[in-house]
Length: 174
Image 1 (spheres, rainbow, N blue to C red):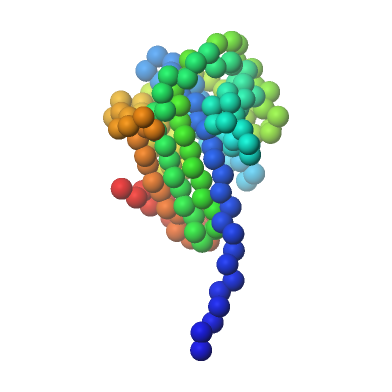
Image 2: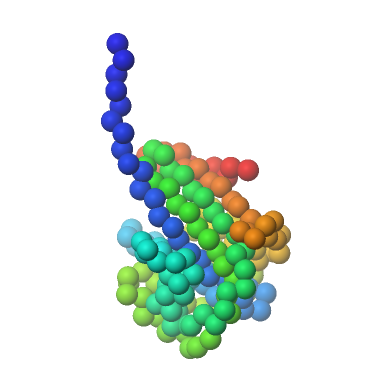
């Protein structure tokens, strides 16, 4: 006897990340999560439906930092994260940017607690509580070992195993 399994739609979204260099480090934002924890990331966020990636990323940078992107220099890397048991998939593009203005936190989503430029060593330390799909690519970019292999930037793949955030395991798929 064959049994059928109900097909559930996988939620997916696209996120843009802005790599704004500061000395040997970069500009980072502290994100307050629903559970009260903080993780550090480059500025960026979810790209709205129908929005071009760089347009949405410029919007996110301005909302989170008050800075205006003057120009995008290149796509540094891309990230794909699959979480089949949680039924979601995430795609990230991280772009190097040159930005101007004064740093002001006015995040309409209420997620960003603060923004600050950090050294490479401090960025690596701050990202220890961030997901591996942030730590590894940003760390490699900061170390200069994330050179673009093609025009789309280097690709990093991750797979989450487990059905909830508290007990999942992240695999870096090479």
